[in-house]
Image (cartoon, rainbow, N blue to C red; front, top):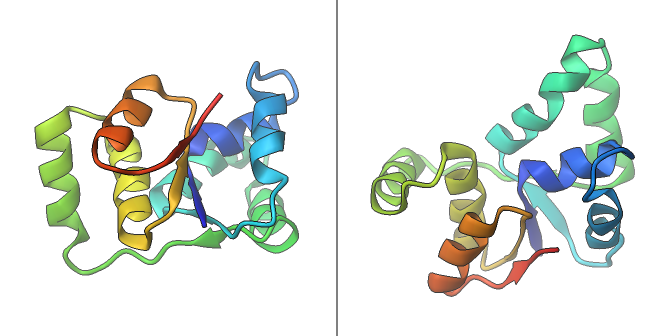
Length: 127
């Protein structure tokens, strides 16, 4: 399984993004794909401006088969501790906590997030 951070999915949706090709390569896999709900919401911000949020949501979850990770009841504590320890931004914390909990790889273009993830034993798929 691969947990996607928002930037990977955003790059996939935007052909003008410099990471667009790399994102396509990451998503072109037989592995299961997952995303934290906060990351998915971040992906949907721009499409919401253009009224395409529902269509993009359906495309991601139905056609690409990206599953939304269900947060646990104690996840806010895990997120708070991770953010306090690492100073990562909350969306990165969400993706990392999801990858750790699922024993999944983490796909990200964020160098700092990748560094922290590797330091915590999470395999990172990056450009």
